[in-house]
Length: 495
Image (cartoon, rainbow, N blue to C red; front, side):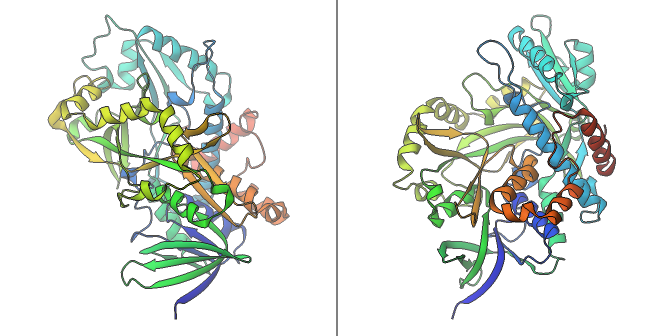
């Protein structure tokens, strides 16, 4: 007889999203019985792992793809404001965890590091200047510096300016000292370690979800033990699918009407990792540039200071590639298995609309080590091939969905898909997901637990954990200043 266990909440995937949702729910209602299942043998071993995740605390300080230039020449900062506000929400929640000894050492997962945008060429310099002026209209970006002075930029990012010929080409940069590097793998593991100390929370590793079916008011989730091959069932009132690239296939298995038409486009990633300690120690910033014309947002290059396992690292990339896997530890058949009768049309149409993306991925696949070195030299002119090695990064599955006007569209970002009866939800997509995990999970609570959210106890607790909850940081500079003063102090950051 197959084993059957019950839960109020089942979280599929032991990444940053499940950790965040599980922690929020348990702090809001300690009586909840929560189960987490993960196909690998540890938490944060896929998309949330430090080597598989960009590690930037995405605040839109330096990410130029969040501030597109409109046809009239003005800069659209709406997405930048939303992302910056969301990251402030994340920092408030993390500060609560640290203050209450739920997470002990903030330096284990977050550090201050300047966020720098760097461009060259008259048109790009003009764009960066306009972007800077536009962002200065909102207090979320107070403290940003702009410079076209070679000497000043060299003080900010010496590797970027070393041996650079600026006589014939203008350069410009912005710098935000409030930027951060976040090890989401470490943060995830810290939260899971604490979750396990709560009553009625269990994490089961090495468990592959094979099927998800709804019977009456409960979801029956069939799970296979990877070591023994034995099957068991978990019966849960609410299911969250936060399995990174593995979320789409599981969502499709649920059979909910809201999942119809969704598909996925998998992209693999690679980094150049610096192996010369002397070079690593000369760079202390996250330097983001502009994606080349016709390239997708995911291709935004950056020369990136990271802290992984307590050691400072220096990476450059990402370099993209095509894959049929949805996860780094997935199957080559993942993409083909995800094609269904209701999503094949949107997937084909989205593919036809994104021929430049296909061309870009083919070019990336054909790159030689010398080609990647040339790309690196645009940000570090003095780079030498023997100082860098190629390392594999994580896989991302971009969302494809139906669109009444286009037929099918490819989206770059994150999206929550939930059932009409609020009993199941899945997170699809990629960046800036991890950085905005708290805001995403708060939105999920509002969507799937609306009655609970109306309770005074939940409202009071959320305001205790996130002082700006229900308020607008983008429109209240005094509140933002108070929040930032607190979070930077608690997390050991620079204001």
